[in-house]
Length: 499
Ligand SMILES: Nc1nc2c(ncn2[C@@H]2O[C@H](COP(=O)(O)OP(=O)(O)OP(=O)(O)O)[C@@H](O)[C@H]2O)c(=O)[nH]1
Picture 1 (tube, rainbow, N blue to C red):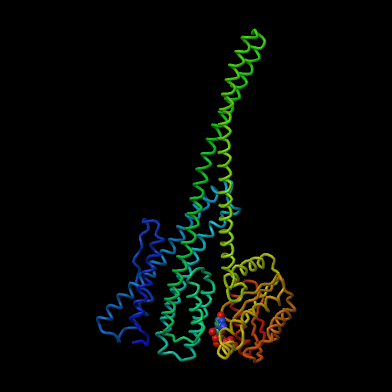
Picture 2 (cartoon, rainbow, N blue to C red):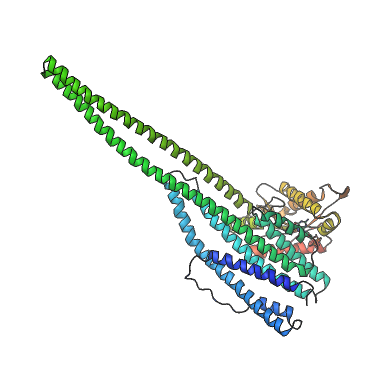
């Protein structure tokens, strides 16, 4: 048997599957989709490898069954992800319509369509993260099984890579609410040396927290939208009442206006035609009638006053609604920006880099101005962590990121590529002197006067760079830069290799 508690893990896994199922049924907005039962996949064979020969026949059968259920669940989740995208495109349209209605009602916040659709986009991205985590879970399981046969250094390499990817995923989550504390704990755990056998359960915990965070955000968005909806309903109701009240007031006033002018005309005619006594009696009669009209007029004025009050209330409601919507939009914009920012170093993350690289690549294809991509990796960073602790390591990463940012031109770009690796894009670069800005980057890091536990420490970086060439894809250029970085490391570190 493996050296971790199988029963505990099976239980945890079963609970995660339960949760995934609930999430899936949350997404299952239409019954018309039938979920296919999948073939038992790669995971099953790993699971079998883990248990065969070492458990009793009954246990093995039970585990086999569990493994195939898990494989089915994974496939169902993938299907549901595809379906979500389909549903999302429909709900995008609905949100678009809602946004148009908001705008037509005259008090929607500017760009309301943008923030409404961004709600659905955010949900989609969490689905992607969940699927990615399930992949990590499979890799962690495979590592855990292989840990018995592989050499220690090989094991450590795989382990580091997986931990770094999970750390990066945590940095990209940006949840609010109670899960943030738990995520910070996991982050800390992942930065320590972890036994391969523990990583699968950490993965499960991370899946758990992602689902919880995702639900929390979904609940918040739903709450806001239902508040907004009920406010809208109220405003629309009041608006309808006010309109019909206004119309009837207008009709009544017109009617009274005609009435008064009729009375005045009649007085004029009597003044011309009648004797004094008769005139007096007629005028009294008319005055009585005018008095009656004036009393009615006072009542109309009171109604008008109430109407005015209601309009003021409505104005107030619209104002509150506007403020709420603006706040929410602000929150969403901040969260959207955060999706592209690395939470530790506050520079762009890998997603931000993907976005920018795509733009730079298209511009390079179009204008053919030289574009350089450089990968930078901190040398012997593990030693810093091991000797001075991960908090010191985190601090160093932040300072290095800030220094890199300051050492490039405004039009250049730097992002954290993952773990202790950074990527820099230099556009419109002078091809003959490509080494100059790269040396400047290397030296600026070397000059940082780090001091940990009173020890002055020099940190260096190795750098691999390349220019985009005819026929290059983004991937092929990065691959070349990565090979150059590998050569810089092997040439002794604190070096630049340009391919
Ligand atoms: N403090 C901290 N450390 C991190 C973070 N992400 C990755 N690391 C650490 O970076 C170190 C990378 O170690 P290795 O891949 O062995 O590389 P290295 O020690 O820098 O050695 P070379 O790259 O070969 O020069 C590991 O100790 C990781 O834990 C992070 O967010 N914070």
